[in-house]
Length: 392
Image (cartoon, rainbow, N blue to C red; front, side, top):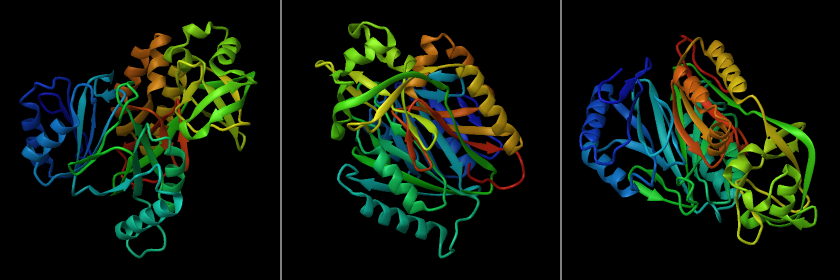
């Protein structure tokens, strides 16, 4: 444990958090931790409602010159104290234990799969060298604009370009304002972008995901939509919000983020169900989604069940897999946070995160291998064991 809000893990990673934009000493503590740990790269997660992007870039340039980093705005943060909002987190990775390279993919709405695959393939070749297959000690992180409407295509392209390097990550948020998210690579901010972070380490790791929804018999067929904007106008040939509310037994005027978190919609792909969460209800009675939609898709109403049980079971399994957890880098859907609060289990979930030393943020969507997901926790656990890590 480090003084003044920082914590150092067994692998040398140091995490420092701040909940006060006026804390003048925070950046001095970051600079001291960077020097002490000989950090070569940092991940930075921040509430853009509390910490303006330009203040983050200016502070890092002034106090940690030359430090390479990838940063994104959030919809909430996971700190050493559990689940929170309005924070800034800097995670420093020591250069002698982690070899890391960051890459920016611009204009993701228009980039096209072919261009992204080529760009990612070149980034991979530069990172892993001429070897035909990846090292078992390599993984990739994705941070992506959560308001781009492009996460599915970008995630698929990243997965294709990375080949057998496992991928996970989270979609940047903006504190549920749904205006603009920010991604920063080495001091340069952008929207409509994705950041790819390639990591090689001898520290054992394991990539995993967990969710807690159970399908019901209730079906909603998308009969009119705007796929480019992820808006459903009609379910079952009726106004979308009205039909959704009818099926879950609510007044349409009472629909809120808590309703969407408590009654998620899922689609079945290859025998498994994947969440397609509602972002918000629009004034015309249509529904905006966090994931891709289209006419003809059959959605099933699901009910979250046993979040505490399923979350604890997932972490218990991971702990056994990696020989004890040093820390977990986690990407947790903001709707899971809302649902936990609605069901009054936030303190239990926060306790699990504290016990397993989770650091991360609440997302507008999660990436796992080739899939863009909702209402899911995706994470990478770094272990205390001696053997090197591997994918899922």
